[in-house]
Image (cartoon, rainbow, N blue to C red; front, side, top):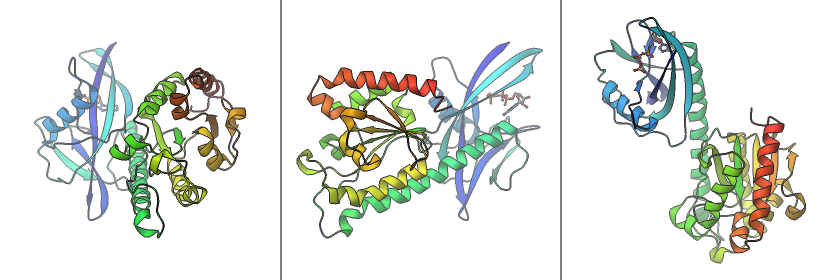
Length: 322
Ligand code: ATP
């Protein structure tokens, strides 16, 4: 059997306010922009290049959406297994210049679609659900970022630091609040604590790019102080909405503040490394220390490493994310 690897893009746009997806017409099937990943080329670049070659569209891909499909077919009597990695992109251009191997193109909706291969139909459904969540998160983020202008008393930074990661992540990581770096770059966990978090996630068997990272308070508290109860209370509804939208199977709580506010307990030193079934969120909660504490006090690093190595075992044993 021969193995082939392609990459492609699910392209969507809005026509009269309705979400449409681009499909390309081949002789007897409907395809999406995709093609062979060249030697030395990474799949994302291949998806962008193939989209340009097959449609004339210059796309910028969603940083996190990534779905694979696989199928088998015969080529010159040889059985081929083809794996295609699909990315996602929005476009405002609806006029498409298809390449020679296509007969034409169509903008289709999920509800009113022509016959596609089953795996493409499922792919489209997953993409559609992802975009729904992306848009819901966008609305929450907009409301949340306007909070400082709406409240009389606001002592936190006015820079909103949005959550980061795939909106369909199975794992959500919740910290305390952004730090100085995060405030400047408006990205969570990018300083030393962020580096440590990335390493710890690896120990638990996760790439950082597959988890959604956020915090209880998403504005930097001056001098890195602990947010007040009042501040936490005002930010919590937004965190809860993020949890509702992402629906993670596992929530990792980092440190006392996150544990207290999300789980209602403040016993991090007693409960770290344990997996708790959450009635409120429907999934599991895992508690550990805050990486910033381990950056300040190195003695906590091995303890956290042990927690996250344990998490890997617990996830595997309980088949939590399957
Ligand atoms: P690429 O676009 O990756 O360069 P290609 O144009 O050479 O690929 P495919 O689109 O993979 O070829 O088609 C090869 C065969 O696989 C055809 O017979 C086609 O009908 C079939 N095929 C295409 N897409 C799918 C799919 N999603 N599921 C199952 N079979 C498919």
